[in-house]
Image (cartoon, rainbow, N blue to C red; front, side, top):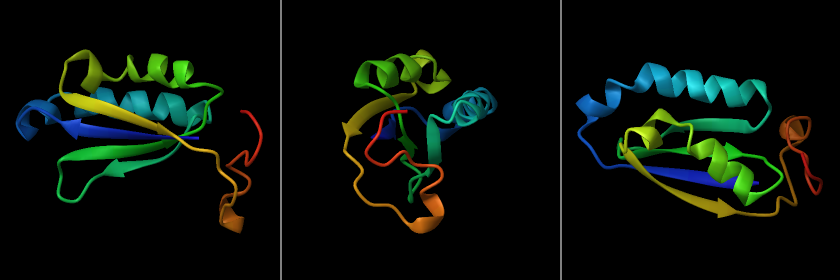
Length: 100
């Protein structure tokens, strides 16, 4: 599993000009069961995406498609972790202890 941490590096007005493209990008990877949950930080300085993938390289490749990455609107930090427990309602989404 991966935590993708976005930190906005441009004014929100510039970021918002690419929000529709960013949401389409998110939907693409929700449909592929890569993204599990995403949202804005509070205060709105960036966002978080929880993802599952087979490798860090796969996540890095996916990030390069994000309009926020393409247009250099945000910095991205990725943290990999091994999920060992999950809320019962999420167990159908998460592949705890196995690859995607």
